[in-house]
Length: 130
Image (cartoon, rainbow, N blue to C red):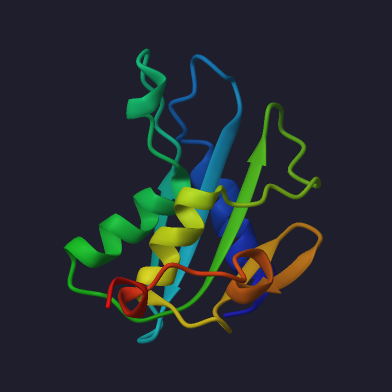
C-alpha cells in the first residue's frame, strides 16, 4: 500500500467524524504489519476531555482485534473538505503510538511523511518506568 492510498483512506475515515463542537474532522488509517488497515475518526463529547482522537480510535480498534504491530499511519484533518494542509497528531496520540511502535514508525501527513522519532523525540517507554 502506498502512502497516498493510506492518506486517501484517512480522508475517507474523516467523513465519519463526530465533531459537532469543533467542526474539525479528522481521520486516520493505520497499516498493520500483516497488511490490514484499521481506520478511525475523531469522536467529540460535550465534556471535551472525553473526546477521542482519530489516531487513538484506529489504534484501539486494531489492538482490540489482536493487532499490535504497525507499519504506518496516515492522518488527515480539516474544518472543510480541503485536506491539503497537514494535520499532525497530538502528544497523547504520539505517546499511544509509541507504546506499540519504534522510532522509525511512519506517520503520513498531507505534506509528506515523518518518523515517530521526528515528532516525539523523547518518548516515555517502559524503560522510563524502571
